Length: 258
Image (cartoon, rainbow, N blue to C red; front, side, top):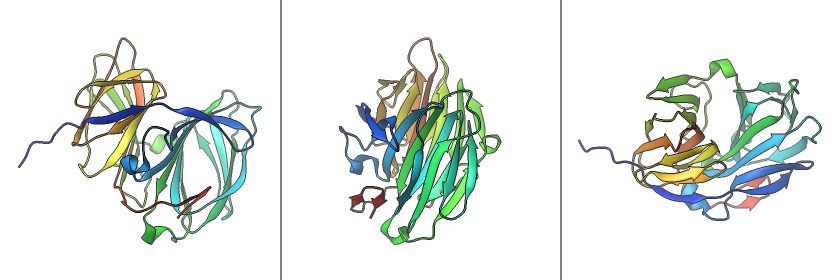
């Protein structure tokens, strides 16, 4: 048996601001101006949104051809869709939408308006053979998120391991905080692609201890074991996304991906 190799970092990319919904300013990590979809396949989009109590919502709009995970970091958000699903997603919880052959949904502020909503929305492509599946919806409650603490790192498992949230594409989605002096190591299948997105602080990532800070995207290179540590006297918090690439052409049609 061979020894697992350490993951390299292919690139560190910056994010940029775009206007979405009825006028919400979001920071966009994917699609990137600096990296190609082929480097992060199957991940299509990642937005980091801050919504205040007087901000407009995201009115009903359609999607097709991919899955969506919305992860709430603070505050709460509500969800409605064309299949009758109604839910409030609380801080630390998430929702999964399988748009499949098509559905419409709306998003807005939840009942807790004591603080701004901080949320990450991720789009995961579906392989061509699954793009016409029936739409589906799932809510992940904060208390159902597995938490692992080890070696100065705390990991919340949004997708993977014992998390009840399931995707059609094999995917790992972790919310990781590494304290100063701690370390995080995770085995990732060598065929998986993905990235880390730094939510807060600065960290050293991968085999060469590549530095990245708040709002930057760290693209995974080749290897298996992924390493991360805090850079400095403060913790670093990031999400780690890795998934099975589809290696199929992607045709964007706004909210539809064929």
